[in-house]
Length: 499
Image 1 (cartoon, one colour):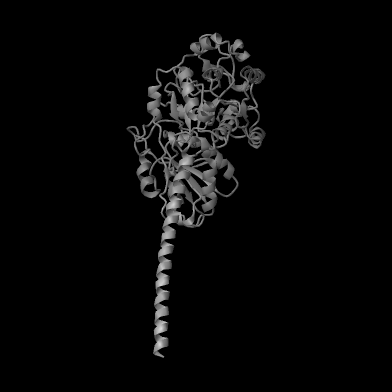
Image 2 (image 1 turned 180 degrees about the vertical axis):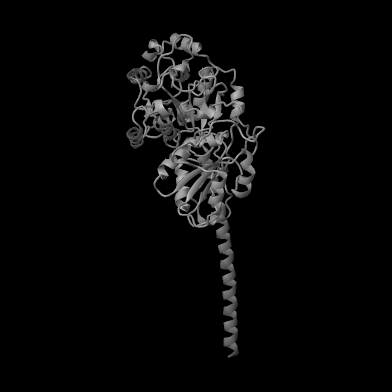
């Protein structure tokens, strides 16, 4: 019996020793695997940071087709793949994901791509004495295939000539409103053939045009202003086009409209529209001829033998839609031929609303709020004007807050008409109100600056302008919209999720 006990003890001891040796061997294998995988990660990161391994993102520009670059030199293709350094608000660092063994993920460091933010105000100052050709070259170099020239069919053909002279690839788009002169359509064809390009046309939504014409007729703009028609035929198609870009190039000049364009910078973060990344700051606007006078533009066109719209020979200077454009008389300003039945100081269709200069415009402080005038409000025209947007008084908004069991949900914007961020979202909010009409969701606005500001901060969660609140159907407390993305789709998703 003692002999068998001794044999059993010996076997147990051997088993324990073998178990410890197996555990040590397993630990060595895991460590070796981690080291090997870390090396694989480093190699993967190195290869992905190499520009020769980058895969450019296909451009998204409404219904536009991507530019064929198979015939371009490698340097031009490389420049077209550079991404914009515009940082959308609330942007998060992007991670480089690598497929590596599971064991390595426990020891591999997280790789974060740094997002640099360009100071476009400083860049505009640096380019103040640069020529339009230099500015155009800088824009095309910086944004490659993510930038396009907005061409109206007038003297802004100079932009296409400048782009052609840079030798870089470039894109051109235009808004076909359906109401242009026949001479303008012929001019588009001439430009395409002259430069060997394809203009990327954007069109208004057929259903929206049909609704406008059926309800108000073909010439309603003569009676109630051009803004509604321009919003349907120009502003919304432009917004769709710009959502596929990171930058665009315009032919605006300071001398075109002293009341609205006198302070156009050469380059700026677009204050009114959003680019493909979404949010404020996601789109850059270049104005290469901002400092050039009209007669110098025409000297350039004649010198370079550039084709021009035949309407210019008939006395037209600024050219838009046929019903809203006419020739100007000697001594008249060029914008006198646009919407001549309206106030001569507000000759804008909405495409460049963010550049409008207002006397008495409140200046923004660090929180995005405006410094009010002595009486607490800025004397500027009201915004968000639509039959589908209800104007709420102080008593109206107070009653809405007190209701605990509402019959329908309400979406309300707290705004100040002088605030450029409020102005920038006007088109989106009005369009949203039109889409929500008849759905049971009420859309309203409450002017919350001046004497109402303290109340709005205390009772309505006002932090900065604009603040958007949703008053749900069966909830007493309003829900504040948390995002800086104020496009129609984002706002609609917010409403649908919480109403």
